[in-house]
Every structure is written in C-alpha cells, then in structure tokens.
Length: 160
Image (cartoon, rainbow, N blue to C red; front, side, top):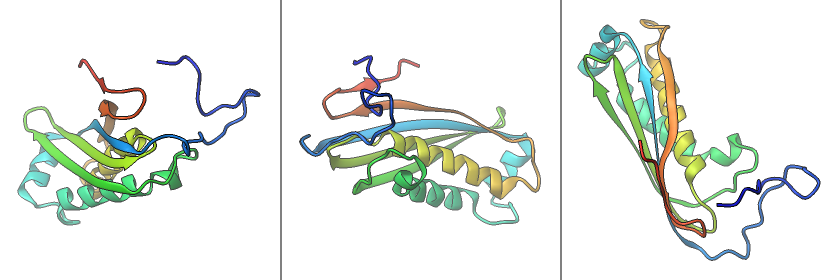
C-alpha cells in the first residue's frame, strides 16, 4: 500500500486520478452497513405492513440507483459502466437491526469500492425514509468496505 494520497497533486490540490493507461480488469467490491431500529419497526418491515409500501424493494432500488450515480455524489469518482449491483438485507429480530450488503462489479480501469459503499448508504437512508413515521430514532451506521478484488492493489478482505 502507498502512503500517498492519489487524489492530491504535488501542490496538494484535489485532482481526478488518471486511469487512462491502466488495463481494464475485473473488479468487485462488497460493502456492509446496518440500520438500528425499534423491534416494533423491524416487525412492521418484515410483515410488509409499512404504510409507504415494500421497504425491501424500495431500499434495494435506492441502493442500485445510488451505485450507478456515485460519480454524481462523490466528486472525484470516475463514471463507470457497472456490470452488476446487488443489494441484500438480513433482518435481525431480537437485535432491532437490519444488515445491508451491497456487491458491485465492473470490468474497468478503476475499482468500485465507492459504488458499493454508496449503495449501502442509500439503501439505509431509504429504509429510514420508509419507516420514519413510526421510528425517528433509527440509526444508519457501520458502513464499511468488507472486501475488494482486482486492480493493481490486489485484494483486501476485512478481518472483522
């Protein structure tokens, strides 16, 4: 790993990294996050009784759309032709929590870590939006990169 920040030039100004000379390779990133809520809110989601509609479907589409729009949200990200985005949810009854996982793939010259992280964040925010009428104390948290593969820096797999 380099200790140099790649998005800064020699004068410390923000720049978009030049990737034109890099080879296109298969890349994947997996990110996770959590939404903590009241048990009663989780029961409503799981039973499909949230007044706004299908929380899982809306949050999944929000995550997929966010991955596709990452360069519009994160200033120095390159626009990428994503080959797949999946967003999955694991409800945790008894813990008042929903785990979110996003997996993003591309064949390209730069990685998709930011797209996976953005997908998780947007999915968590969509869950919040769908359920805020019954639970304003929800917390979207622990958004983190779990693994990435491909590219010059190789693989990263989080230990926990």
